[in-house]
Length: 157
Image (cartoon, rainbow, N blue to C red; front, side, top):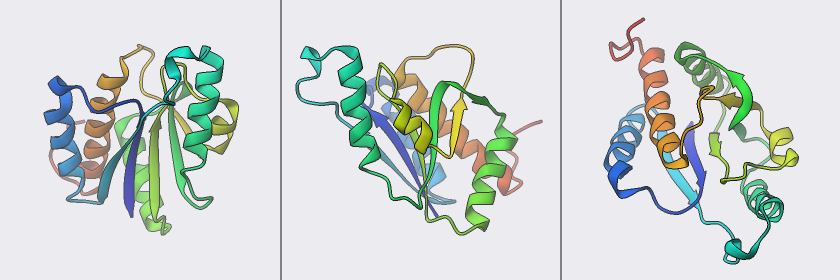
């Protein structure tokens, strides 16, 4: 199984990049893992928020195969804990999933088509975080889930 971590926007913030890369490398000990940073449309500064969201959402939808498992990070999603995330990864792996995509939308979120395409909509927290910080939190939580699946000591209950 391969895990894809998607984020709309440019490269990782220089202050967070080393930590994001560290957790991504750690995940790679369990599953193939790679970031896909999707730059927004070239004319993004001139678009209304709704149009920007639509264009970014279309680009995202065009990137997934119908058989891919898609987890959308969204403030209206379901809150789950680290053990539930571990269960999700373990279940996907046991069911023969080839790709699991975790998607962080753009600054204005995603459209309803992306939300409907998602197999799961996950709310990290009731708090709102900057996109760059969400990248780090996502990478760390996926790594934590991997260690839970393997019964390793990283996660303490």
